[in-house]
Image (cartoon, helix red, strand yellow):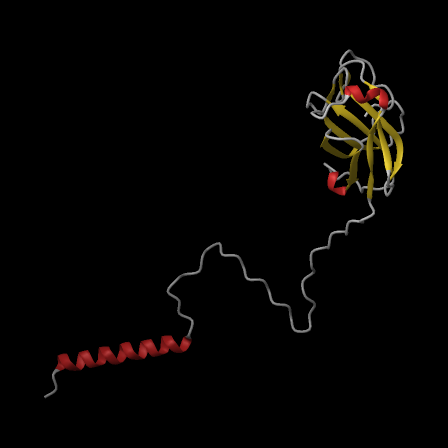
Length: 200
């Protein structure tokens, strides 16, 4: 006589085995549920379809889009410029109003260690992306003793070239005028009034 308990055990093993085999055939079981916010996989392009558009390439920088030259000190100003000073070279758009300052294009800060002082202005010196480094620009230079970039102190020396074309080489940018009073380059002379023409 067959033992009923043994028969139950054999049936349980057979059922469990069949269940595992069916589960393996499906091949889709996973012990980890999908994440609720998982990013969707990128859709594969349809056969014969075009690939997704690539990001637009940036415009290459023109290697000739620069101004090079030297800052020179007028003989009468040599006593006013010290090696510990800072030189600011600034390029601006040429303003329509001669009493106004054009928008800032590029600026370079260098130590006043020796003169003539070689310089180069290019796209790398643009603090803001407000157009290309091209066309005619106004160049200015100033010797700064205070270290404050927006204040020109009495006794500082400055100079300006009203029109220089991007691409120019061997430009001579002169330090030739002496500052007569403290002046904020952000708001005009500290004593009030409009900025004089030609101030950097």
